[in-house]
Length: 166
Length: 461
Image (cartoon, each protein chain N blue to C red):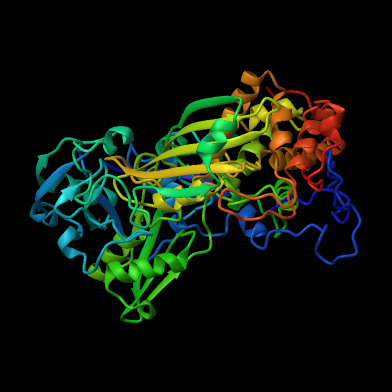
C-alpha cells in the first residue's frame, strides 16, 4: 500500500509515493534522485546518509519516509546558495577535509546542525556533535579544524546568540 | 591527499595552526608545488555532492541484481535449479555457472565467478538474478533450488596442513611456491647463529581477520553500448588488472570492454579484487540492459576479501648486549578457500618479517594455507603489517628477558648504512634510528644520551 508523501526538499515542495516501510534515504536517492546522502551501512551506524529534518540531523536510512510528511529536508544539494559554497563546504575544501569523499556529505550536514544549534562549540562539543559520522580514510583532524574555523568566524558575527548546544 | 603542513600560501581567512612537530618542516620554499597547498581536483565536487559514485548512477531501464550465496562452508554442488526464479514477475535473467562463458578470475586465476560443481566457502556466489526492482530480485533468489552434498570443512590453518585433513582444494591445502611448500628465505646460517647466542627467545603470535570496511560498499553498473561495447562503471583499485581478468571470464577481447573508474568511496586494498564487475557484466551482456549490483554492508563485511589471519613462530638467538645473531620465522597465512592475494602477501611478508634490523643469520618459512573461509586479499601493506606487529612484540619480549630498555634493543640492531636485508639487499638511505629518535621526542620520552648520539650513517664497529 502506497501513500502520498508531501514535503519540502531543499526549499522545493515535493510529492511522491512511499510505502510504510520505505526509508527517507530510499525516497531521496531512488525517487527524487537526490544522491548526496550515501548508503554506507543502512543501519544508522556510519552517518553517511545524514540529512536535516527541520534543521535536526538524522540518519535518513533509519527514518521512515512517511514520518517526515510536511517537514523541511535539507541535503548538501541545498547548501549552495546563489552559486556560493556554504562556509562549511569552503572550509572542508580548503582544509583538505575530504579524502575518498563518501562520508563528506553526511559530515557536512551533521556539522551544519551542530553549528546551527551551537555556533561556537568547543573541540569536545565538536567531537560529540560529529560522533555519529564515520570516516574510514581517517581524516577527522581536518574535519574538526574545518568546523572550528567556520565556528570561529561565526562567533565574531553572532556573539550574542552563541549559548546553548549540548 | 597529504596534508600540507607548514605552508604559508593558504588563504588568510583560514588560518591553520601548524601542528607541533619534532621534525623540522620546511616552511619557505622556492618551488612551484612543494610546500604549497594543492587543493583536490575533485574537492569542490566532493563538498557539493556532485561527484557520482557508482551507486549514484541511474540509467533508464536499469535492472537490480541480487544473488544466491552458499549456505554452507563446503559441499558438492549437484544441481542448481533456476527455473522457478526465472518465472518470477519482473525477472529479466537468472545466471548460474553454466552461463559463464570463460574461465576463472583472481590474481592467480583460480576462482569461478559462480560456484561450479563445488562450494568452498560460506557466502560463495552460486547464482545471480537481474530484475526490475529489488523485491522481484529477492523473491527470485528465494525460488532458486540447490541440491547439495555437504562435506566436512577445514577452518584452522594448522589443521589444514596435516596430511589426513580433508582437502579444501583437490590439489591440496598448501600453496606451492616454486615447487616447494613455503616461501623460503635464507641468509647466513641460523644454526650457527643459534649456537653463538647467549639466549634463545621463542614466541608465537597470531593476528585475526580484518575487514577493510570502506564507507562505500561494492557496486558495479554495467551496460552494453554501441551495439557490442561492454561498459562497466567500477570502483576498482586496479582497472587494468581487472580488465584482463574480466576479458578471461567474459570471453570478450579487451577492445570490446571499457572499465570506467574514478570515484571510489574508500578501498584500503579491498578493491584490488573483483567483487561485482564480473556478475554485473555477465548480466548486462545477457539482458542487453543496464544493470546495477550493489552489496549490502552485511555482504561487504562477510564476503568481501579481507586481511587474512596470520600466525608467526619466532625463534631468536641474541647476545647479552642485545645483538640478534640469528632469527627464524615460520609464517602461516590463512588465505581462505581461494588464493585471493594470499601468496603475494606471503611473499611480501617474508621479505619484511625479519624487521629493519641487521641480523647476520636469517631463515624464513612462509606458508600460504587454504581453509574453507572467505578468500583473503590485500589490505594496507599486503601482509607486511601483521608481520611487523608480531615482530615488534617479539623484540619487546626479548628486551624484557635481557633486562634491557626496549628502545635500546631496537637501536642496537637497527639498520646502518650498508647493512643487508633478509633477502640480501644492501640498504642505503636508511633512517630507522633517526625515525625512532623523532618518535621518542614526539612521545615525550627522554632517551639516554648514547641512543640520542646514534646515527644510521655511523659505520658498524
